[in-house]
Image (cartoon, rainbow, N blue to C red; front, side):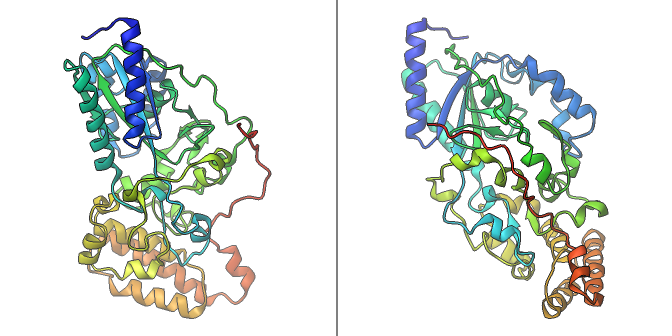
Length: 390
């Protein structure tokens, strides 16, 4: 345990924030280790099986909600955020609403954020240690049993929105979070006490699979990000047509969030899009060999799902394709080339896609085609729009 007098601790806290921003973090906050206010909700969420097959959510007991049990001696937590939205990437709404295109969550268009954030957190810790040699710490970036969003809220980095993401009124939600657990006794920053969503329910209305059950409560088993990234099994039939062309993650709740009018673009070159992942078509990506997949996605978070799951996601998206006869026939031909090559799981999703595409060829009117549309368009409802912040 390491304590300092209040004046020295306050000065150190301010220097830590300055150092963090000089390292590229958009914001730095400091908080305590008492997360007891979030413990019941977390374990109730797990008890409802809303975590799906993310079994790691249950493996660590109270270590996730009690930082001192995860890292004994922790007194203060430094919470950071880093912007990732690439302003040079193709327009996400245009990509999303062209069913022949592949939609990839904006955070995954560039290199894997884990390594970059960990390195920056390590540099921040080294800078602190240069002034406080007795520093003990552990750095986390979505890589351990850490309640990163409650920590960020308590550290003043934003409020927890109805979509369960951290949202800052001056910065939106297009950012990553990271933490340093330390043995320093630092003055905590004031938390975001009030949720600023107001009466807006845009994210709840627009979730393609209705995964947002209510304010801040997510059923991961219905979430497209979970289904395309975390879940390696057979995607439930009733959800496949709702996934549209989203092959890795989903950003709908952020795309309609009014606070994201205030988002800032990333300044990190590693988060810039690569290999046309922001604008590729489904058929272009389907034609990648496994060697292509490994080569083009080297250093990408997408690579972790593996080639077969990548093809599974693409097969579902191709099954949701809407286009002319030539385009649909091309999709049928391309899907058929890989049937029987990668096991029953992929064949199941290919067969589902083939059945849907062949059915489309039999439709005789444009009205019937519109009725079979797998995409849920953004509604035209007038949402609550927050007042501009000066």
